[in-house]
Length: 328
Image: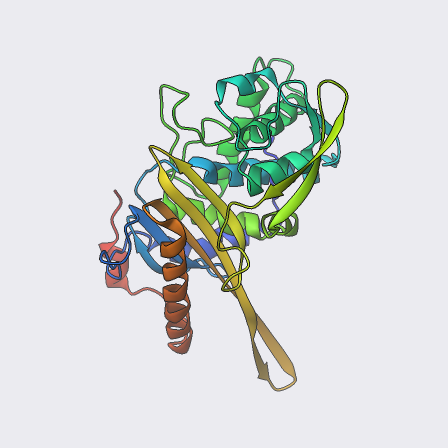
């Protein structure tokens, strides 16, 4: 099956992570006394360089951070197939298996645009919205032999993971719940950082996750139209240059958080030529007891390490560091 995600600049995107992957398991800077998280990573978005990490290649549940992949596949599908995000999708009966909603209150037979469903999935982490997106696009893929449109969509999620080099990731559903299947979905902090960097490189995705609130429109099954105001679950959004990306929580995963923060780009002049280098960090925290406090701590640490790395000329990892990297 043809993969749906963006191919433009994908080769260069993968190359910049080659350097970072060499350090993904290096725990030397981990400060256990102030970070409870089971795993975390701080990377430079531009190069993929790992500034700090702990257990970053350990397979863990990531809860609703899964929806980053769901939204990214949906946006790539829209771009590749020239399908509008304003087309309406119906909330499927299968949402009854997902448990209570996160406040939107979608019911089977309700309808909303794919765009509004993506807002609901990313801002308020609505599982029903993610399920509806997956089934709608799964059907639109047009495989006549497909019996389950959700599975068709999940195939694309895992194809995206493979293309991004997310070797320790297995998506089993579009929402991140980890109590529905006999097997467990999983990923790792480093893989989620790769995904978040790819997703935040898409202006449409970046705009959605940067919104603190959004009013969406729902066509109820009884024919009435209602508006619902979403509130972003990312409590750090708008603070310390943070403009994304997503929260996630389940009993197995604990508190999870992916953050993205950008500062003014670095500008250097050489003769009549200006060189502009973006400054953006990606933070991923998995299995935390206090994700927002620890995310904030890691972001501050990340900028300090970033400035130190830049001052040193952005050195590559040494051969001894390369040979010492191990996988869990």
